[in-house]
Length: 78
Image 1 (cartoon, rainbow, N blue to C red):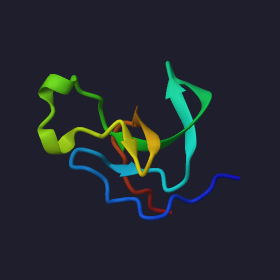
Image 2 (tube, one colour; image 1 turned 135 degrees about the vertical axis):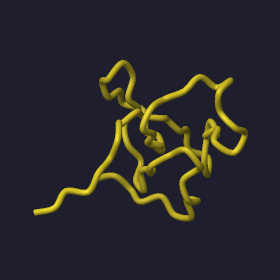
Image 3 (tube, rainbow, N blue to C red; image 1 turned 30 degrees about the vertical axis):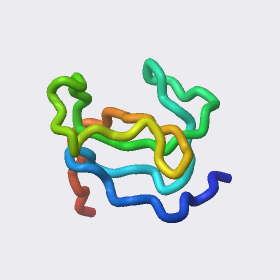
Image 4 (cartoon, rainbow, N blue to C red; image 1 turned 180 degrees about the horizontal axis):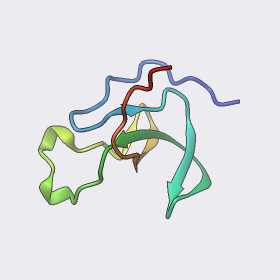
């Protein structure tokens, strides 16, 4: 079971969320066994196109980060 990350800051501008528990890194659409804090974005952009505030740090609270493209997120009504 994934352990909750205590003291994690709010998502950065340009992200749509982040994992509150350590997750496997995603590489080429496949999970690999490396625990990271995932930051979710609608679409990944080249670093040169990001404002400084939008750049996700390489680690947060001593844990590596991973940026995962998830597409547009919309609420579902049932």
